[in-house]
Each structure stands twice: as C-alpha cells, then as structure tokens.
Image (tube, rainbow, N blue to C red; front, side, top):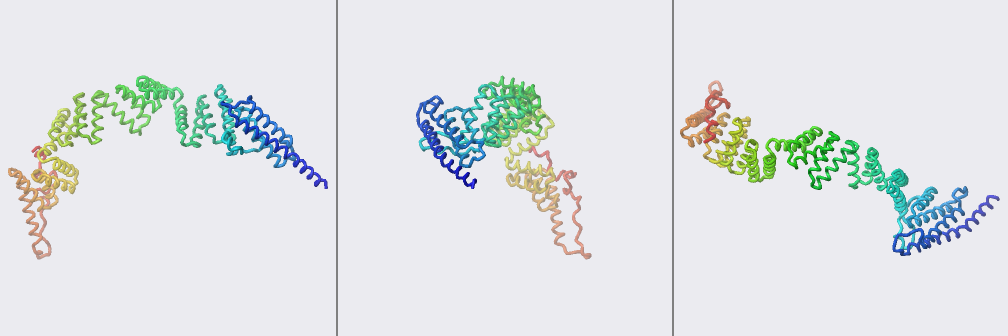
Length: 530
C-alpha cells in the first residue's frame, strides 16, 4: 500500500513541475531567439540588453531544472535527467553566442559531466536564426579553441596545451587541437613530441600539406639539430629569393653545424655551381655522394662539378649543354656546343670526341674526320678515332648507310657473331654494290662456313672491283674450285665400300680462322682507307 502511495506522490510531483520547466525552457529559448534576431552591427556582448536577458533566462532555466530534479538525487528519473541536460545545453549555446568562452565551457562541462553527448546537430530553432548557431560538436570545438588560443597569444604555452588536451579528451582526432599541440611542441624545441603529434595529424588529415611539411621539418630538427636545420631553411629561402651568396653562406653553416646533413651538402654543392665555384662544389658533392652513395643525382653533379673544375666553367657548361642537345636529338646544336668547349679548352679530349660523333651521325663525315684527327693528336692510342676515321672515309665513298652496316658487321665479326656479321656485310653490299671490302668480308665468312658457292660469288665481285688484288682473285678461284669439287662429290655414285669420297681438308686455303696465314681471305684492314 505504501509503495502505491509513494508512486502516486511522485507522479503528482512530476505532473506539477513539468509544465513549469517547459515554461522556463520556452522563456529561455524565446529570449535567445530574440537576441539572435537583434542586429547590433557588431559581435554580441554579455552587456547588451537583449543578450543580458537571454543569459539571465538561461541561468534561471538551469536553476529551475536543478531545483526540480537535483543532479545528485537518488530518485532522478530519465525525464528529470533529460530536462537538466536540455537546460545545460541551451545555456552553453547562449553563453557561446556572446563569446563568453569560459562560461560557455563551464556550461558544456556541466552538460558533459551529467552524461550529455556532443551531437552533430544544432538546437531546433526557427529557420531565420537556425544558421546563426553551430552544431554542438563544432560549438564546443570553437569555445575550447578560443580559450586555448587566448593562452597561446598570452605566451602561456602550458595553459594553451592544457586546453587543447581538454579538447582532445572529447574529440581525439580533432585536427586543430593536434596541429596546435604539435606547433607548441615544435616552438618549445620538443622535437620528439612534435614528430609524434605531426605524424598523428598526417594520419587524421592525409591531405594536409602543412602537417606534412612540419612533420618533415620536425624530423629534420630531431636528426640534424635545430641550428643546422635553421641554417638550411634560411639557405632555401635565400636561394628562392635569388640571393645565392647568402644562400651559400647559410648552407655552409648548416654543413659545418652537422656534417652528416645530406640535403645541406647537396644544396651547398648546387649553389656553389650556380656561383661558378666548381672547386668548392666538388667538395660538397663528394660529401653528398659519401653520405648517400646510391643517389644518382649527386653522382651526376659530382662528375659535372669535376668537369667544370678541370676544364673551366665555360668549357664544362658548353660540354654538358652539348650532351643535353645530343640526347634531345639535335645533332647540329650538340656539335656547336662541343666545339665551343674545345675553343674554351683546347686539350678537352672528350669534347673533340663528341664533336666528331655528332657531326658524323649528322651525315657530315668529312667534318668528323677533322675532329677525329684532333682526338688522335691528343691521344695517339685512341682506337675509337682510327676506327671512326675509316668509317667516315667509307661513308664519303660509299654513303652512310653502307658504311654503318659495314661497321656493325665488323663489330659482330670481331665478337665472333658470324650470322650477324654476314647479314650486315650483305646489307652494306646491297646499299653500295661497289663496296669492295664488304664483298671481301662476305666472301671470307662464306669460305669459313664452307659455303663455297657464296664465297666464290662474293670474292668474284671483289676481284671485279679491284682487279689488281691477287688475293681476291685467288680466293675466288679457290672457292669456285672447292664448290665444283663438292658438287661433283655430291653427284658421284657411292664407292664400292659404300662410303663417299673424303671431304675437303679443313686446312684448305681460306678455311682457317681470323688468324689464318692466307692473308685473311684477302679482306685486310689496311684497305679500309680506300
């Protein structure tokens, strides 16, 4: 019986206080809406009449809710709790709208302690003012962010850090809180902590280029030290501004502060080259390649710097400009740059070599011969020069197509690749039917392969072109004789014992290897200049 009486009493109490709380909420909400609709021409202030009334109504609502359903009361119902939460939430938004941030946070804290949750929705207000307030989560973030930034501006890094950590307690992946915590750690030279937080921010916001930059910068400081990092970054700024002298000074300081700073050495080497200081550039590029031996870029620049140091800046730059033009397929421009290099440095052997190659590939063999002869004057043992001079002279007589095929054939022949050599010599004779040496080598290969009919034809053509050569005539006749003997042998009936006649001796003239004493089948290198 007593339980029924108690339940009835609670029901009567709730029925009596609900209308009162609803009325208090309606008054507070109406005052808030009125304040939001009032155009002050500036940001709201707690001292404005309409906002003072809105704040008072919100405070009265909270007091009424707490009095009707004390937070610590053991008999608090779900309805009681919801009424208190609604009151706390409305008060938090009202204080936030006046930018009274500490009071707004206190209201949000009451709301959260009581069990409220930060929703991604805003209060349900009339449409004309609904866009003037933020959803709960965004408003809470704004309020705490403003409190944190105020401490940061005042130089209170500890206070700012505390507020940002408070924000992260509720919103663990909040990008702004992470960014500011990382920045504070960075500014306090706590690079280890900064690296951890910047890394977390990059994970949360992978498209945040600023976070990636500061993560790299923090790692740089942690690895090389603040002094070296600051000098290096100063050097980059000076370089981008076009002040190369100050940039080089800064990069020098960075390397001096930490000799293991690879990027500082790279930029010091690069800037030294820009300032036409190849000797100093070599030192820095040596350091860079030592620190990063797999870096092809640094190895290239080291060779570039060494070339400029050895032959002079003008010659070195012209030489590399020639290489770039050659790779781009502009042979005329390449030849011009290489010649400029030889003018600046008359002993620059490689510049003459590339000038010769460029002009020869451009179809100017006579000009190329002059450059190859210059190569021989500088180095009498340079086999390339002798080879290409022969090739160029053949190109003048027989044309570049035949000359190139003949050169490829000779290379294949010397490498022991008989099929390729035969195909190239055949291509040379097709392009230039009067190319005696190509016919002779074609005959020689056929003779070595015991293809005597082909050898006879090839040597026969060589003998026609050079009737004074006893060698060509001899091997043409010998090949024809052996071809006839083979034909007779193939057509002869079997002998009484069932065996064919013995084949020609492997020691027959012209059948031996390249080192045979039969004058190499008549194809002598000495004839290459003809």
